[in-house]
Amino acid sequence: MKGHWSGSHRGGNNSSLYLPIHAKFPVRILFLIIIALLAGILITVWNVYQLRAMQESHMTGFHSKVEAVGGSDTSKPVYWIHAKRLESGYLDHIIRVFERIGYSRGGPDSEWDVLWTHDYPFTELSMAIERMEKHQKLNHFPGMGFITQKVQLATSNVEFVPRAYKMPQEKDQFLAEASENKEKLWVQKSNAHRGIKVKPVAELDLNAANSFIQEFVRNPFLIDGRKFDIGIYTVVTSINPLRVYIVDDETLVRFCGKDYLPEDFNDVNKYVVTDDYTPMWLMPSFEKLFNQQHFSFKESLNSYIRSKGMDSSKINSQVYSAIRSVFLNKHPQLLKALNKYQHKNVFFELMRFDFVLDEFLNLYLMEVNMSPNLSSNHFMPNKFLYEHVIFNILSVAGVARNVPRSLKKGPEDARTMEVSEKDILVKSDVCGSSQCITCVSSECQLCFKCLVPDQIAMLKESYYEHIHRQSTRRVYPEPMSQDEALHYDTTKDSSLTPNDRVLREWFRARCREDIYWCT
Image (cartoon, rainbow, N blue to C red; front, side, top):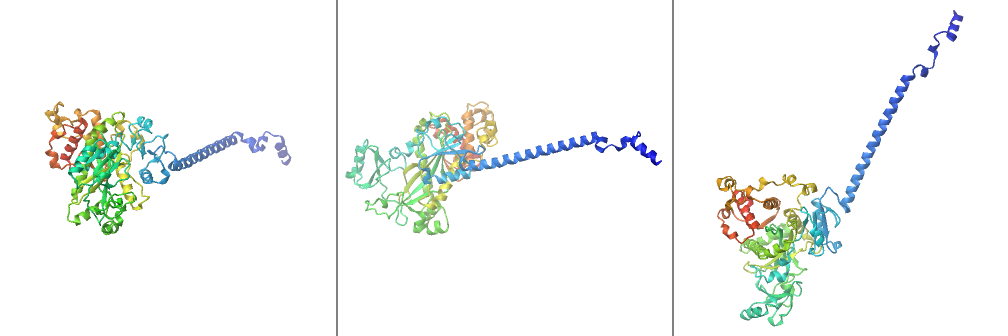
């Protein structure tokens, strides 16, 4: 048995039982190897994908930081500042506000949304302005020099502007006036606003071209013995129709460097507010209100006036009237200057109207400043005033609204979520009546089927300005009470442009329905 077994092991039919394992199961092992290899490949591919995604995420974050510093993040609106000597910092507050409201800084070659220029831009940047698209904004209107040039303003016979005579054209009229009113004092000015000084008539240069001689307000309202002026920040958002606002909760108050002495006009620091003026916080009468209690410039001044038994609201009503008078006086020239531009709703303008008061709180407009100073380099506490002003005017002008660039440049129907036709419609009782089956009646001019597309766009913009006005107040079209809106004589509007008539009637209709729209 033992030998038989040995023989069977070496040469019998069951010899396959003793083959190596890899020879016995070759198919199963190969299958397992292929599965392992495929799994490894899949894992490798997944790791490569994840690594690529991490790299892209890192680079996106890196580029976002770079763009925030000096490039243009395409997801943000872009502002372009065009000005000289930017390194001096006089526009730092403007830059800071733009960045705070979510803008990236660009340049002339970027896809900019807002162009802010310090100087009047319509010559130097004429090509860029003519190529503007309807979603872009520029902080100047064409033709505003009719208001901001001192000779133009002073000789316009506008209410609240002291009487002035243009030299040398009106030399004879001036001499006649001076001869009949020898008690009046006179100053000679020019667009340069330099060398202003009260002089006897015999010392005035009656042949100086581009100058004017203006009556001097000799009985100014004084605080702590100092003469002062009041700066009202004003923003124009449209010319046709005319829409004008002021920053209503704050103002700039500047005092002369020395006490006012009516018998001494040799020292201009006693009666002219210069760049080196005395700020409110250094005046004794405002130590408690402004310095300790932190009231605004405007409220500190109003409180002081009330403490003297006088009505400070008289100032506000005169301010509104004066600003309206100026714009209505210059409106024809502004309309003409605007006509050459394809897109007429891409402009806005910040100005400062400077006033003085006499001892009876009568108001006088001295000048209107284009691109008023917004730098606190000289007076650091003015920082808060300037940034407040900038934010408010950017808000009402439609620049500070948090609207994605894709929406600003998108189709009209994409913007209806901001304001639609339904938001602007008024006078439902009238428009739904048989009277307005046609548009013949003037009562139906604001009904939807009677409005043309340009009027609808105009009312949408007016609606949006009103709800985003922040601390600004509408000066024109003038605010009114609900009672005034109910009993308004529309024949007063006959001399207005068609768009102005429609807009004024729209505000009156809204005021009658909701007091929120009255002011």
